[in-house]
Length: 485
Image 1 (tube, rainbow, N blue to C red):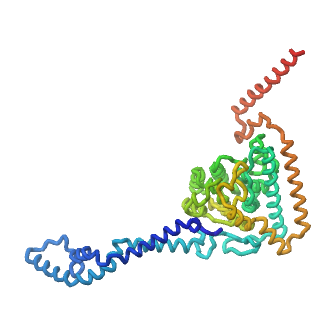
Image 2 (cartoon, rainbow, N blue to C red):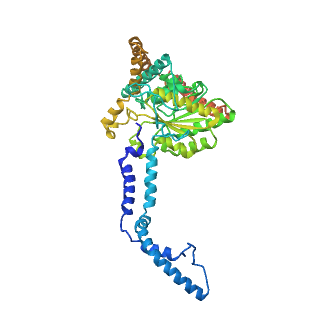
Image 3 (tube, rainbow, N blue to C red):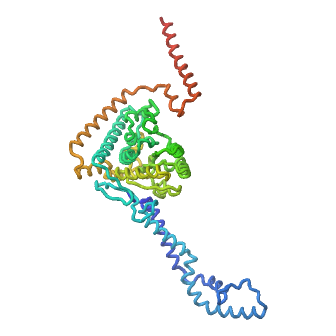
């Protein structure tokens, strides 16, 4: 999980090594070849080292000086040739640049485990982790969280119920009740940890996969299904939970989040904004523009990138030559990579990032390093482009399993707790099934809602005209029925 992009792509690391070796080999080739340049250098200087190219002495003096210079040059030729035989080829073949390359490569390798924010101390792990896949608590020099047993059980409950809801939605799509469903399987810790870190006054701009964040923000999970059934644009009021409607256009919500955050700063409000997006969206121009504006205007926004390793079928290493969180430095704000399967680390990092934003220090980028265990959506077949052993390796890092291991080892949850949670999960699944099958058809007049923040005369006029148009069908139906009698 901590390996860099270069380490994951052996072609890049071998290229860097061969470049260094090539320079060293060239340094020992053809000794003595550049003797001529050494002679020229000696001829251009007097014994005192002063240049004589522009001097114009009288004829006799010039002849005498010329003889003296010739004699001096003869004395220096042998040492010059000898020195040239060692240093000259290196200069010609590019050993100095090669050495610089090797030094730079070594420096990059040495700092690969350091965060590019704060003091850049080399002993700061690149990946923030507080709970290992084996369920062991560990410390981090910059991030910490100390949840109570009740809070730990709450985080576990959030992830379990979110996963059960997601699984039920996938089943409903397979049964034809939903047109499509984007599963969050494997990303529960990234979403629950970040969602629980937000304050009530904070505002969230999701993609189309943030079902766990919606749960943490208090959105009824059954309302998430409407858009994928085609009966509404989202089903919930964004202002009730400060949770914007799902965005299908890849990356565009980061612009909306940045603009909203700029407004928050202008109003002097004590709140922050979170913009969710994926590793694939990080390659979109909208995301780059949002980074630029957020940095320039010091907007209180946290960019939360869930790097689940696959942008549909495109692996992350084909999108970026550096870890995604390091891109933030180029825009002038800090970035951090967190173990996205560690709910405690995500909670700690997101809390600190939100405090950073609220305190007027501007934006911050979080890269939650996780894995998409399921398909991109239910219309995707991941077996066509990724290996089974890759998925199996990530199953061992399951976010729910590691927290359960901690709870059981520390005696923070008993069998009754887990049994009760199973019953609660079954009840949630049943409620979701009933909700989807009784979901009403959309009200055509709803299309005129949530267009402007305040009322607008043009929208009111269109609403009136459309209502009259709808009523005309009822009048025609009534007239036809009357003629039948």
